[in-house]
Each structure stands twice: as C-alpha cells, then as structure tokens.
Length: 133
Image (tube, rainbow, N blue to C red; front, side, top):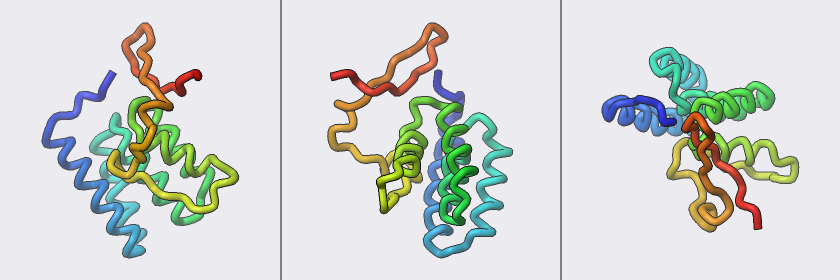
C-alpha cells in the first residue's frame, strides 16, 4: 500500500532529499535538522524525512537513533529502497565505508532486482524480501 502523496508533495520530498544532501555536504547540520523535522510534521506518513534524519544522525555519530529512523522509514513504506539500503549499509559490521542513499537514485541497480522481490500480504502491503536461490 503506497502512501497517498500527490505530485506536488512528491516533488517537494524529492527537493528535500537534494537539499539535505547539500546541507550535509556543507556541514550545515543545524539547518538540516530543522528542515527534516519540519518535513516530518508536514508529511507524517512519508518515509523520506525519517530516512534523511537517519543519515543526518549517522553523520553526527548517533548510530542507534539513526537506525531507529531508518526502521521507521521502512515501516512507513516497506518498498522504499533507500531505507532498506541504509539499514543494510549501517547495520553491516564489516562495511568500512558507508554510502548514503538519500533517494532512490543512490541505490545500486546492479543485480538488485535479482536479489529481492516485492511480496504483498493479505492487507495489500508490499514487503521487500530476499529471493531464495
């Protein structure tokens, strides 16, 4: 079940992802946090603000709270790939360099479609599951 977000809201959320990416690269953390918090209030059912807050918190070194926000984003929309990707990146103890997924364009495309599939439960909610070999 996808969130009911209209075209203008989707554009605003896409713009939010780009702005947060720029703010983090410029180390404008205070502005970044205010922007994300505002987006969380405006779009309480969208996964993007929680995913971005997770990235922001990882940048600040708050791993535990960041993982909670990645999980919240995934819970809001189990088909939202950036949240799954970030949880995988930051949950991997052996991964030394983490690449953030601010939006879907940051998620790797190579063989990803072969590793995972979307299954829908009895309520019509999509879940990304690893394919069995």
